[in-house]
Amino acid sequence: MAEHEPGSMEISEQQKTFSGFLRACAWVVGVVFIILIFLALVNA
Image (cartoon, rainbow, N blue to C red):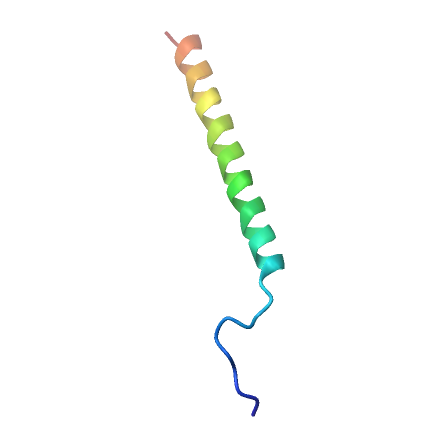
């Protein structure tokens, strides 16, 4: 079995995926926040 050296993996693809995930989460939170404000103003 091959020896594994910590820190030797190529993780650039995982970093790009995680960055996209965080960006998508931020967009969803922003859209939900805007929808909640809109609903509060309409029902006031």
